[in-house]
Image (cartoon, rainbow, N blue to C red; front, side):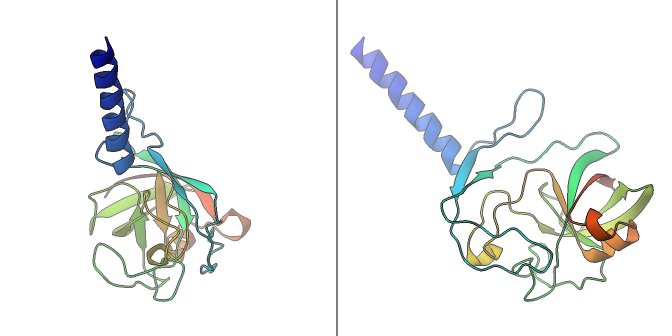
Length: 185
């Protein structure tokens, strides 16, 4: 009986270790991605160019080690604003091409993996625009210099340049977080 209990405990510890290291993706049977861990925030100054959130010491930020499912013709997401230029709130150069991009370029970062250098269509406010995926919005790491001391991205985000927001005719107090749908272009 003690051998069975210790095997069960060892299996549970191993499973928790796997989940905590990101080897496993946490996706439920309905295809939704769930929180797979938490990152403890470290406070430091970050670039607040687009009202970016800065990490707070000790605050626990959710991490996602899986991508949201891509659904049929369009996928619902939250669009956030990001500057992809050097010394801006986007942190370092874009992951997909190693370059910086101006606020006038139609570019995005997705929390969905494997779309580097592809184009997507984003629809909101009765309009649809085409933008290039130049970066991935890291939903695991953050609160460090590489991420401009900002928390990990939420799971289902289209992090868009100001040019995308302008093309969708979204201005003023609506800029920051906006419900959109997107699909492959």
